[in-house]
Length: 505
Image (tube, rainbow, N blue to C red; front, side, top):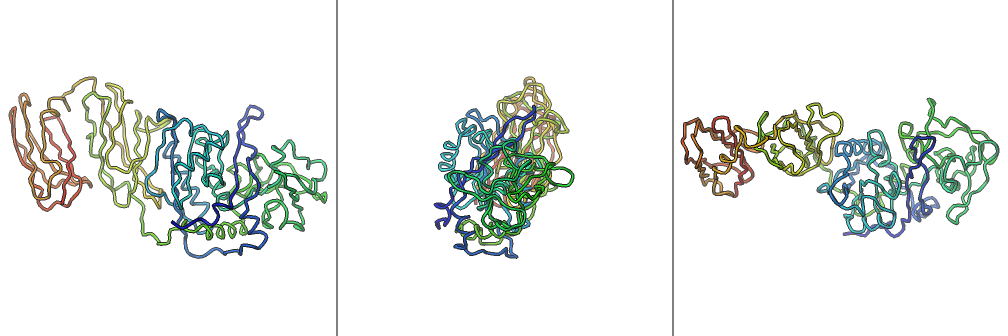
């Protein structure tokens, strides 16, 4: 592993801190521990700028969803994907594309779910992956909406601050790549009410974290030395989240140290304007981030990936069968096929076919089967669907839904006697060796069909229907099967059993 040039230089903390004003929740304040050593070196000329290249740079994100000790409170996965899409939309303008590195992790820890900065740094030290943008989505990140921790070299995001259209993630990644706030220095004033520049000229300097910070003038005469140090980000003295007007500016004007009145522009992502107002980084900020990225050795994926979106049209829900009544249980296995280009699957279970409101359960998995446990009610109808996700392109849609009913007790569709009476061996089995399927104690028997199905949902073997009694024996050939996972589906009249089998080389 190559060392990160900047890991010892970065000392930045940034955070959106929530408070309440006039009965409405707003976001204000910042926990910045000074400018980073890197941005000082860069803006003093000791680090030479690297212009934006034409090639797309692929950057891995280690994504961890944190819940409490009981596994509750996790961020909604669909919201996470929407926020990740917006992050890539914002950084597409600088030819950076983020992708999800390896598996999406789930962490049950009340300590980290609701943490302070010290505990947050501990979270990152314990669970960071090297050479990734480590991002943790938690319930309460140090009383904040989000922050970048230089101590932990990671990003913490609040669940309530990654809703569609919110740019907290983009803002914190801007800090990750070295950018200060556009209003740097004014953090010392805590909120807009303490900004003494509405009715009289702003002071020439501010003191922030023991450092003298020049206040930026409208004429640009000190733009390289004042505030964030970028001359193409106009003066901004607003250290609290604020709403722009229809013209994209703060609804009141301010006076700079020369008594020049100006309006604060809202479009910059590193400002504290509300998310509906911000939209972009400035060219100088883009150059700085590209330069910072170039110094983070090992972060960029050097090989250009070949990828395509995972398509919902290629996904088939296999089990439970549509409209099936499953045996009453506190767990039900959901099974679907493997989809080309899919690295993850987003599974949703709901009691409404419209999936409106709070989803009953929703989670990521990298498998093509999952067990729903401990949340199912008896004699209740459930709807489920799956969205395949590619790690490089998380856009896409869900499959169509299917529904099943969790029985009140053993039902005529799938019952304990059928499930207990069927055996399939050997499992795993070597390719070419037939599968022996035995049934016993099946009551009156009935019309039996047996199918072998691959992960794409294709029926490879479909035995003719035949009448069986209380016992039966049959075989399924595995000649020509590639190693992998398959499904055996048996139907005895209106009763159904689906079993997973593994074929080895």
